[in-house]
Length: 170
Image (tube, rainbow, N blue to C red):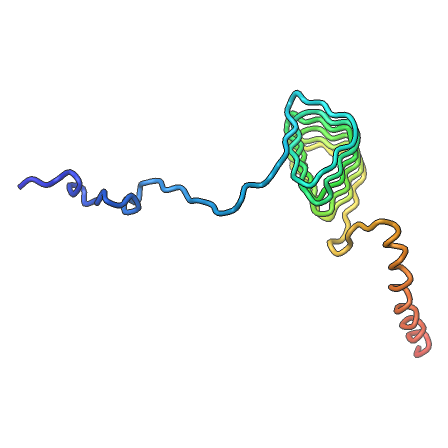
């Protein structure tokens, strides 16, 4: 008795999911991350600021300020600038200070010459880091000097009575 080719291996071809060897890509529902790219041949001199992630594969000289976003310096990227960002990933060369509110990641082919101030830092084997490192606690967020001065008397006043009470009872 002849059987159809569909059933000869015990596999039904009506549903692609029934074959365990078939590839069904998983569809993601998240939106793609908006990211600006500075290409390999671009050279920018001056101040760079914005509100989206940035991938640098070219050359930048000056100042980069993206305080709420990620900056990625690609393998071909060369940055001679002070950087302020939430997250910095270095695969190329950076010459300048990095001030990061979350983390700095220096990959094995990356090079940083300058001071780094961050909450978290990762330096892979083979990476180059010349300069100082300041690792802040995660609770402390950078503030401008006016806010810091305004909050200092408020936070110092409750501490003074506690200190006096501790010395008086002793």
